[in-house]
Each structure stands twice: as C-alpha cells, then as structure tokens.
Amino acid sequence: MQIWDVNMKRKVHAIAATLALLFIATFWTSTVAAEFLLSQPAVIQVKLGIAYALLVFIPVMVITGASGFALGGKSTQALIVAKRRRMPYIAGIGLIILVPCALFLADRAQNGLLDNSFYGIQVVELIAGAINLVLMSLNFRDGLRSRHCRQQ
Ligand code: HEM
Image 1 (spheres, helix red, strand yellow):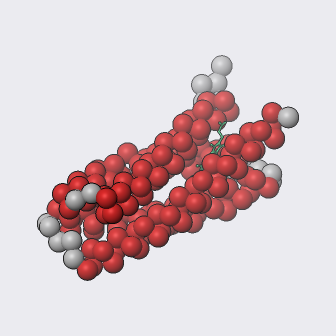
Image 2 (cartoon, protein in one colour):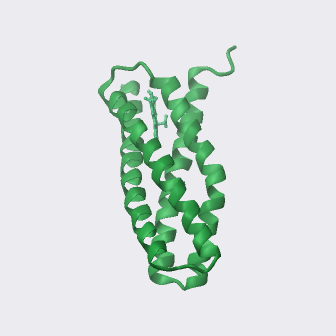
C-alpha cells in the first residue's frame, strides 16, 4: 500500500487549508479588535503573537500550496484552474507584503513606537490581509465545490 496516496494528500490539504484560513482570519480580526476595542498593551501583545504565529503559519501555507499542486497541478477542471491561478497572488501578497509588515509592526510595537509609520503600515497590512482572506476563502469554497463535483 502506498502511504502517500491521493486520499492522504486530500486529508493533508484539507487540514492545512483549514488551518491556513483560520490563521489569516484570526490575524485580521485580532488586529482590528485590538486597535478599535482594546488598549495599547493589547495591540503590542497581538502584534508579537502574530509575529510568532508566522513560524507555524508559513509552513502551513507551504503545505497547503504543495498538497494543492500535488492534487491538482495538471487539472483542467475550471474550479481547480481558478484555484491554481489565485495561488501565486496569495503567496506573493503573503511573502512580499504581509510577512514584512507583520515583522515591522511587531518590532515597532515592542519598542513602544506606535507612531504614524506604525499606523501607515498597519493600514497596508489590513488591506493586503483582507485581499488574501478573500482569495483564500474563494480557494476554500472552490475546493469544497470541486470535492462535491467529484462525489457526483
Ligand atoms: C489557500 C489556498 C487553498 C485553500 C484554502 C484550499 C482549500 C481546499 C479545500 C477546503 C478543499 C476540500 C478538501 C476536502 O474536504 O476534501 C480543497 C480541495 C482541493 N484543492 Fe485546494 N485549497 C487551496 C489551494 C489549492 C491549490 C493551489 C490547488 C492546486 C491547483 C488546490 C487544489 C485542490 C484539489 C485538486 C482539491 C481536491 C478536490 C477533490 O477532492 O477532488 N488547492 N482545497
């Protein structure tokens, strides 16, 4: 029996994709909640928490993408083609904008520098995060839809 068979890949993909979506949704909502509802120490804690969570989040994203391509890298099914096209944007926005923003904000917050440049970058991070949240939700929806197609 092959250990790394297609069902295994599906399971790994489903778990990693769910975790990835939960992570990015939590990053976004906890940032907004801290900024608008909580105090400055809460903002500092949330920024630090997100920076550490990247250590888990980045591998989870890599596993989501790699298992997705292993499952549907050559598929011509429209839903999968759409998912494959979104993935470079998700990865690019994540690595070029979100990770540097999260590290910058955590560093600034740790040093008590909640100044104009902090809030400028915070706005950029929230907008880029919202775009990635939408793209990842669309991939999640299309993943569930394509599974549904397969079962028919
Ligand atoms: C952020 C990125 C992604 C998310 C959130 C995501 C989410 C999901 C979800 C929730 C499922 C259903 C899993 C299940 O319960 O069986 C799924 C299945 C699938 N995804 Fe993804 N996915 C992502 C990226 C990708 C990429 C880049 C590809 C590659 C083209 C891909 C290809 C597939 C395929 C082929 C399936 C299996 C459909 C089936 O069971 O027949 N996914 N995805």
